[in-house]
Length: 59
Image 1 (cartoon, rainbow, N blue to C red):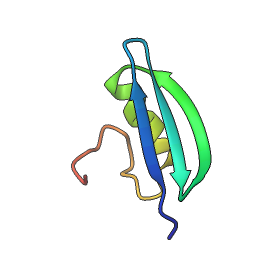
Image 2: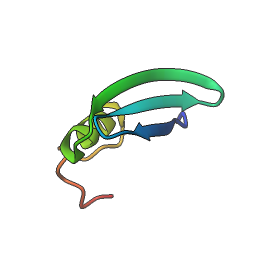
Image 3: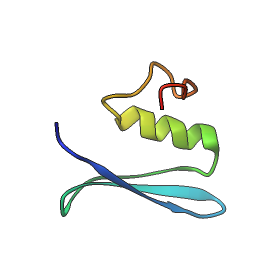
């Protein structure tokens, strides 16, 4: 299993996400600064995610 680190820059209008594997940047993306949008962006990239972004009981 490959280890991916996520960095999040949060501002009033948006969140910028940076996915890294070691020193390599795997992906960068932007989402709105809302909890639901941030959950959706993170779960979309997670291989071990629960069935829906609102199902946080397994975290």
